[in-house]
Image (cartoon, rainbow, N blue to C red):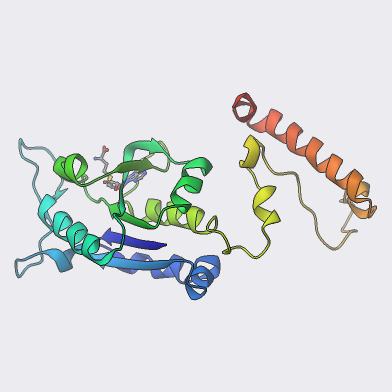
Amino acid sequence: MRIDIISIFPGMFPAVLDESIIKRAQLKKKVRIFCHDLRDYTLDKHRKVDDRPFGGGSGMVLQVEPIFRAVQAIRKKTKSKPKVILLCPQGKKFDQSCARKLSACRNLVFICGHYEGIDERVREHLVDEEISIGDYVLTGGELAAMVVIDSLVRLIPGVLGDKNSLNFESFEGNLLEYPQYSRPAKFKNWPVPEVLLSGDHHKISVWRKAQSMQRTRMRRPDLLKK
Ligand SMILES: C[S@@+](CC[C@H](N)C(=O)[O-])C[C@H]1O[C@@H](n2cnc3c(N)ncnc32)[C@H](O)[C@@H]1O
């Protein structure tokens, strides 16, 4: 997979993308990630990317021209037509099934808005999908892009070492994951459930399934309705 990110703050990305599992995914060549500075796609000497909104109002709007140029330049570099995604609080709410669908794409482009947002013509003519990471407003699309990229990259086959860790994860099968414990078995007076120390795999599996159902019923009954 190839991922391109268009942002006016590309320096925000390495802290997240060059660490941990995403870093390893890149080293294993499961994904290539390119961060583009939107200002590199301007033609004026001040590298201006924003302007005041037509009709008045507060704040600045990211202009259509540099974004158009950036998307065109990326399209020339990708083998198949990329899916262009705009991070946006008005978009479809992001979830695990969306992450799974995106993890199967070959080329993704993420456009990060800033200030008051972006010129509407970007949405109308360049974007295939708008994604929101929740009902709140961020300063820019960078953090949202990182959230989406983190969750989809770990779903690319071969990125996580143990395939089972995905099968039993929260939201797979619309259930939350069961509780996890590790060593030491004895700490203060806080016991680990006996069944997990029993070595009986069948019993452990039954217990985990029951815990998973109970947790989901208590915390996220909406998932069970799906
Ligand atoms: C300050 S916001 C603009 C909000 C816009 N004025 C509105 O009311 O819809 C600036 C940028 O942050 C990003 N952003 C903010 N909240 C987001 C969210 N919940 N999900 C995804 N992106 C978000 C978008 O890229 C947006 O263009």
